[in-house]
Amino acid sequence: MQDTTIKVWDLPLRLFHWLLVITVTISYLSVKTDWLDVDIHWYAGLSITFLVLFRLSWGIVGTHTARFTQFFPTPRKLLNYFKSSWQGVGHTPTGALSVIALLLLLAGMVATGVIASDDITLQGPLAKYADEALSDQMSELHSLLFNVLLGLIVLHVLAIVFYGLFKKDNLLKPMISGKKSVPLAASLTLPPIGKRLGWRLLFSVITAGALTWLLFSPQAHTFFYQPPPAPVVPASQHAW
Amino acid sequence: MKIQTILCAFLMLQGAAASAGPIEDQIKFRQSAYSFIGWNTNKIKTQLDNPDTLSKEEIVAAANAIAAAANSGLGALYGPGTDKGEGWKKSRLKSEFFEKPEEAKKAALQFNLEANEFAKVAATGDVGQIKAKFGKLTQSCKSCHDSFREKDVK
Image 1 (cartoon, chains in turn green, red):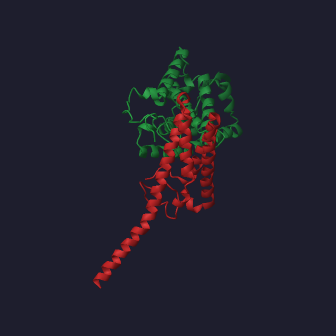
Image 2: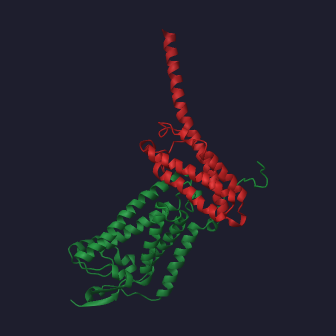
Image 3: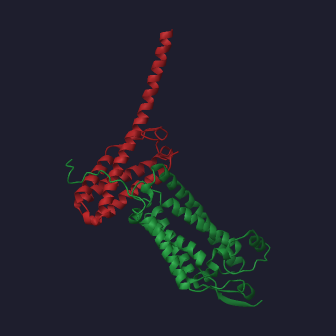
């Protein structure tokens, strides 16, 4: 069988992947250890929100292997994969299941995290608009979901080791260089990358950036919510 | 006979009220104390987050209030059975607090230490030091919360 080297992961996708690794690690260290300040968790959460939103957008307008429609694991694809008759490039059907699960979990972490609070100094950007009971539930769910996420990350890494050792398929290198040697026939199943890639990238970055801003910026919130003026006595007026 | 029964029932009710009281009170005082500490913690955070309008006096006042609360002997409010009761609202205290008394004591003493250290540093007015020590103080809150405080009570 003839092999050919193709660009399997585009640069935005690889950047997304490794930035996500870094930000999730920082996010974890900031709340679970003393090494990093708790305040950093807020910015890590903001960065992860941007990255996840970017990936969702890139999954619609990105290049071939990045698109959800391209790799969505239909039952037929999964069946073919287990019968070893699946032929394709990019996410394998089981890999696609893992990708979708990871993205959904991260989205869940974002959705719960923005409303959560540690009742000390760390507050999700929307926590102040939620009542206490809801914020408490979200905080609890945020840490529960994290344990599931951690399990999936372990599974993800183990799968890569398994493919490397037993299937002689190095999955790590293509995620760094973007290039992979694949059977010629399989490479032909890919749709074209498409035109105006720069504009599509810009669209994704702006969409993700704007949505992140709406979620995290108190200034953005004033468009939707005008808090009643708090009857705070200025410091100069309370003498005791 | 009848009077004796009524009297007996009355005394039993009194007894029940007396034994429910302290637990409820302990939890109430506890919740009030930590709300007060939380209010002062937020005041400090607001000051540190807004360097342009930072008031060192406000930080000192809040730091002294936290230290005073920490030094007031909060341990007296953690009597046996106070993980189950209800004060102003249901207590979030985990029963692990009573199962691991050594660890609980360590967490409590750490908070006391950091609260007093912070009050000292606040008095010096060195903002860099204040920020660093404030991080230590809130970390001591967090480590106790992580071990002994329920995130969500049903």
